[in-house]
Length: 259
Image (cartoon, rainbow, N blue to C red; front, side):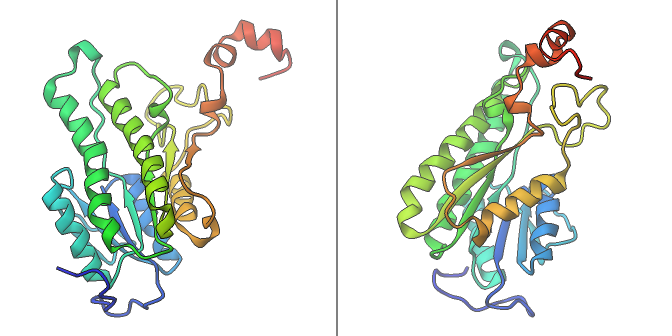
């Protein structure tokens, strides 16, 4: 287990100046795209997921359940030792049970909160003592934190907690030079869903690579004066009035020449 302040790089070929990144929930489409995007910048990336996995962009991977605080702490110290330091953390683990509130089971509620919010908190709590000045934490939130959708009470509550945690940590650790931000993706993919693009002003859903680009930006020196923010990556969904956008009669009234 690595100790704070031990900069030795365990993995061969990782320059001391390379960004050293831990992604939790690393096997998801967004996380995997973020790993590739970070690697393209020269960063060394360690990934953790519930089950063993291997994917391009990762210098090292392992299985761990970061909803368990002990496993989260162990994973953080493993990444610190493997990479020879740690300066970027991306908590991206999530589960999304789909059920109306009255039908949501205790197990579904606990899974949504523990995996989505609990793993983010446990990972950050373990990582913060190891992070140097200039480090960044970039959470993966969701538009569902602020935009209600049927059947997602646990997921929405957990992602709302992720946003609140982002602001809290940004305030507390800003004086140490640690920035904390979040991205809030809209629907990513959705090619198998009929009319998935409806409601998106850009007329389409997003891609994992588009979310990954924002994660890399917020984690980089280019965003050095940005902290405590939640950046929507949603094709304009969060600024659209569902009634005005979706109802043909209202669209015709306000924008008679609109498609």
